[in-house]
Amino acid sequence: MTDGSHARKHAERSLQDLDRAAEHNRAALGEAAKTLIDCVEADGLVFTAGAGHSLAGVLESFYRAGGLAAVRPLYHPDLLPLHGAATSTATERREGLAADVLRESGLRGGTDVLVVFSNSGINPYPVELAATARREGSQVIAVTSPAAAAGAPRRTEAGTLADQATVVLDTMVPAGDITHPEQRPATAPGSSLANVFLWNLLMVETYERAGEVGISLPWWRSSNVPGGDEANAERLEHYGKRVPRLR
View 1 (cartoon, rainbow, N blue to C red):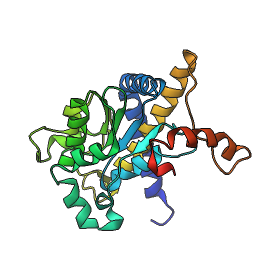
View 2: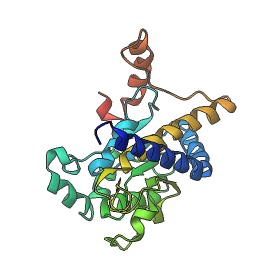
View 3: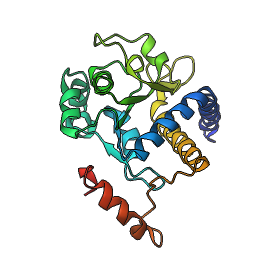
C-alpha cells in the first residue's frame, strides 16, 4: 500500500488521542492556568524543564511567538541527546543534578512556578526537580503520563514526577511512548506531540482566564511581522534580567 493510507489512519487515531487528552485534562488545565496567572502577576517566573526528547516541550515554552515571556528554561547540555545520546540517558538518572540546576537558576520558592515535561517521570532528574521545588514552596505542574510510569521501574525513593506535582497534565501516552501499530508498537512516539499540544492548550486557557478578570499577561510576538521587534523589546528588557538565555 503506497497511497499514504497507513499514515492517514494513524493521523486520525492521533487526533482522537489528543482530543481525549484535552477532555481528560479540562479541570487540570484550569488549575494550571490559575497557577501561571498568579505567578506572572506576582512578577514571578515560570521555570520549564525536561530531559532527552522532553526538552522539545521546554523549547516550545521559551521565546516562542504566542508564548509567555515570563519563562525561564532549565537546561544542562548533558541532558540533550544531540550532545551525546547515551550520555543524556545517564545524566537524567544522575541523582543530585536537579538540586544543582535549581540552585544555579535562582528559583524563588513561593513565587516562581516549575513546569516539568517527562513522559514517564521516573528518573531522578525530573522527580528531584519537582520534589526540590515543592520543598522550596513552589507550585509544580507536571506534563507526564501516569500510565507510562505505572509499569516502569522506580529509580528514586521520591516516587514519580506525578507523585511530586501540584498539578498533573496527563498526556495519556502509553508505556514505552511508541504508538504504531497498535498491537505491537514499533514507531510513532506520542509524547512530543502530546507535550506541545497540552502546553498550547494551557496557553489558551491562561490567556482566556486572565482576560476574564482584566489581567494583561506578557506574550511574545513573532519577530518576523511588522512591529514584532518593538513589541518584544520591553519583554526582553524586563525578563532578560532574570532569564540569561534571553540575552
